[in-house]
Length: 281
Image 1 (spheres, helix red, strand yellow):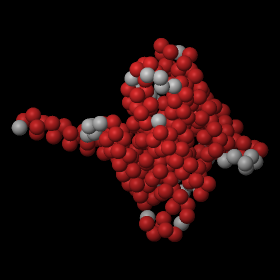
Image 2: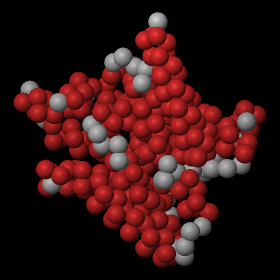
Image 3: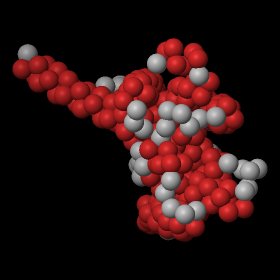
Image 4: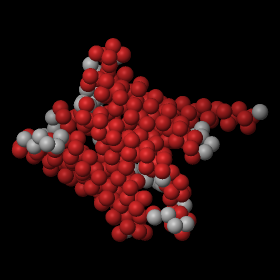
């Protein structure tokens, strides 16, 4: 695959995008898991699919070339994120209901737009499960911009995000502007999910945001360690998944998720053996 990456620009774009996604998804996923919002990735990914389907429909019916389906997917994802945050404010006692409401709307819109675009085709299939040859240079630049934005925000607002993740009431009393940070955080989540779809696919993107974090939580001794280990596991899964997808000629999303699941299983098994050995000793 190394020769192919050196010789073909589209594979270089995919590999570089995969490395960026392997960093971003677990990084933001750590905060998402701690906040007990793991299902938000599923909700926003289906809203993103609605945006992608809308973009494909507009391209097919009205030759809308100014915005690609990837761009309309990002727009829909951001709108979905804002809707979720607003619904969480409306249903304060049942905030988790905001996610299935948004997910249901996303699925409904996806079905309508896919049907209007004359059904599932190769483009939709690539967005559903990822592709090793679907990332253009402009897509790479957009993902890179997203990465810079997310990393800068996390660096400057790390203490606030940390406080809100573990004790929102205390953070609010301490003077942290919780509402603004909540909106900023969920918009970042929407951007990362939309960026990840090119590599992992709509149906599997939530796994890349949760499985590496679940693996890291079994061995990390602090929140920062959890972030670092999550990124390491995420990058490893993406690299192995892309290589396997290239040689097996299958969508990389499945191989990335399987690799992440194997890492989680091995970690749980080794941890269990280690604890048994300690207690027996």
